[in-house]
Image 1 (cartoon, rainbow, N blue to C red):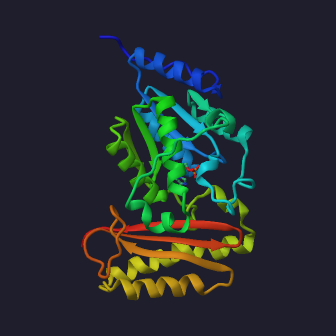
Image 2 (tube, rainbow, N blue to C red):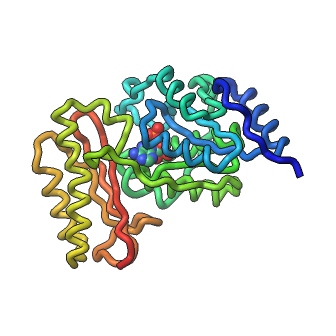
Image 3 (tube, rainbow, N blue to C red):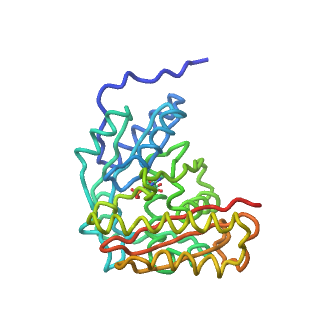
Length: 293
Ligand code: AMP
């Protein structure tokens, strides 16, 4: 049997054309090499790099995409100001030793006359889907396109975007895409703040205020551990914690089923607590899972 040998990690290959990316993937597949894929919007932090490391550990070749996907941004959202720092992202990826960076232009992905979108139903009606109409349609469409282009065996996604993961799992299952979706745990800063490219927008004061998200989740965990099971009571204490400092605007606090996102009255069985809060210019999300107890 042919042994799979990793290439010596010279420089990473930068690809912006869809047809070149497809040719590379087809050739890797012909050589029986497994392709791990990490889709991102760039401005990479340790949360992203953790996904990349998981892929490098398991797959013969790792492809990372950097593409700020316009179709997942609403008209009043931060598409134009979303942080972009390709050169320093490349340095980080080179240090890790990934094989290929796919960074197409908007025109390459959505040429004039583009007209096809995919939409996952039901689970997208809750949480972020409710407050960001069109967001998951954009995410599902770009992920399907990227899967068709990169043709990965495995694709790695972070549990920070818990609902997004569920949407992608549904997309893969319903459309028989044959890609293994690997869940990777949420990565936090040492003080608890969930890592996010949007943390860069925060002033030092807003950064302090943003800590209330992870703090409120930690307090909720403690209360639940002490026996409080009423979702209403927990939700109220989260709201209180989030409102303590000025400058927060709560989008949602959801205590729900982690698979279908329906609201729970009582915290019994596996439960997701998910938050979306605007702090200054940034809309931040965070979540925790309460395991069955
Ligand atoms: P983004 O660039 O924000 O679209 O994210 C690309 C991927 O990185 C998604 O799968 C995210 O869930 C994941 N990701 C972003 N932040 C984190 C984090 N703090 N911990 C784990 N995964 C993350």
